[in-house]
Length: 211
Length: 83
Image: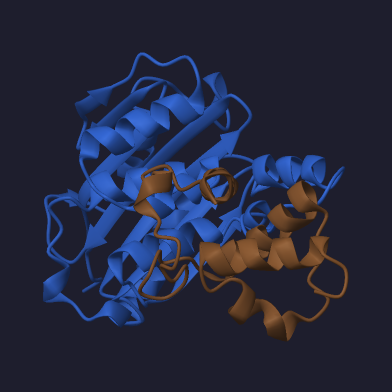
């Protein structure tokens, strides 16, 4: 019989709202992305000074993972059992542009380190001490089929026992992150239909592609 | 040194740190202020931008960036010929 895995938790951050398992856990009133992300960070009440140094994409992924994993008992697993697979459409272009601009004077090393999207994964893994398989893929738009099949295979070949996966996208004033926690136990089966429902609860993909 | 501390905080985006939190002789790396290798590069950028000072020998880095006082002494030494 084919093994079944489950979405044991999910979290989204978009339009100044943070949702955990469909419930609004924080709503901001800020008009700018850095201000909103700072409000979410302060709302979480954690002390993690490196947060301030991250670029906006890394902050978005880090904050989404922070909420996603708030009830996750990682002590049940080995660090190498837990992996992260992320996707987006614009890679690290937001940081790339800022880095390019900084090159007019002296290029910023602190910006340079964020000119790869998989740094988002690194920030999450450093924070939570995850050491499992990880990858960051770029697609034109959210691709639930890919996430479902790729992550399923990682779990099924026992490369991982747990996977944090999803979409972390940010460019300019547009952003959206939706992360899923996939485990062997749960209620909601890990399949394309459910991934899409969570990613886009009220809209079809064609109505708002990419974001 | 107070100005230098403010510049370090701004350059390294240490938003939870105030100038008075940084001791003149407090180690900046490791168990001290906890800076990392990227911060070291940003400190080099700071010296170039604000003080027009360049590190000619990378091996001198650990000694120069040991504390705010050693950075200040390095900046001062570049202003005095043959110092």
